Length: 607
Ligand code: SF4
Image (cartoon, rainbow, N blue to C red; front, side, top):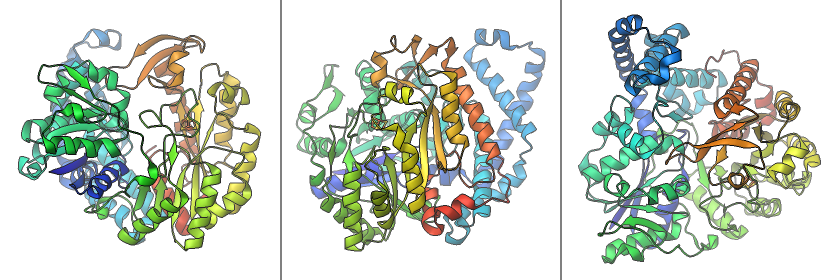
């Protein structure tokens, strides 16, 4: 019985994702045959070429010329937009997107001529490490994706996201409509050509890993194709799927159209159990943490998998991966030291949802695993994808890495704990740590208390100073406009971002009301009103706060972000969502100070 794990678009195409490799590692350790196929990276490589850019531009131009006469005489106006059919709304938005593109000054022929060279820059060891060439290449790739999206607008594909057509909701019926509509969803045509039944015939089980909203439309389009064209048992899993489990339980038809089962929570034990269950031919009721539809049409949820012992897990298996496909000259290998978050109390957060209670590998096991991945794949760059690793543990792991003489560079997310002393940070740097993503969130201590972040805010500046002094790059995550935050408090957080003395790069976001976060039960206390579910397949809700709707709150953040990005356009990285692997590669090659000081001569135009 052979199993395939598929990573569907859209996800960052910079480096491999962990989930498939992690599950393959567990199945192989139990003697099962399994492999991963990263359809996300295949997709980006398939579409970013000259022919595709030209054909998309021609298609978009034809649509524009066909629809423009009707648009010019139809008397359409913004005031009545909501009264138009969704088909017409889509056409109007598509036409406006094309007009904006024409005004942008981007030249189709130039992008088409350059796109293949741009992709090759990101994979070439010399050219990748020349910032002038790298940032030119990223702009060309972004321009190309904009052109490729034009025939499907307002749905669009980007390096950092896939935005589904906003005229349609994330409710079941609208998603079903999109996965069947080549006009709305570029993945219908793509998978139609890509998915050949014979390529999948050898697999008895196909797992599709969905860990982000950006994968819902493409991932479900793929699931439907595989269910229709193969005889394999199709199972959906991933952190995102866990977060929408309650909606799925109420959709019996979902199991006729998209999959045979849904795997909940951590998959390491339950996937092995699912394969054993299918192989032995007994009822799926014997599988762990599974939702499926039985022969009577009832939705069944099986017993939860036993708790994982992180030390008992096999290492991830990246055998068969073609690392050359990824848009980074050197591979950054993902590895997980722990499950869940050791704090798990921040009121806005749902990151750890779907993971069991906190457990972490022993320092020895973690060091063995790092060593084995280095030996097996010849890689020396790592991201530890943990929600947060305790400082004391990190200090011990760093010492072990140094004592064993393992030569690696790494980065990870971390809480701004006081126990990240200068000595610990120095030890981490000596072990190969090159940057950390610190959860700074809000400048105001009052707001940090409401967030329940549980850190001593007065230490944050010292921590960042110390980190900078030992040679680390400081990337911080910020949260703007938390419920109850005053204008002045939001401004204070923005000032920390603007003052780049200690924060080298950052990811700002506005508060999102997530269905699985603690805050969802405290909306009245937080002053949130008009709570509206964003749909069955969406993990957050819209709300009104201080008279402002979610979209206006988001727009304020986007305006701030755009302004800041333009002002810092000659820096390599300032606000960053997708390129953290590239920051690691640059800081490990040149050092944080070199990256900090470098000023681009190339003028970025995509923000
Ligand atoms: S925001 Fe970070 S520290 Fe807070 S609960 Fe989430 S993962 Fe843990």
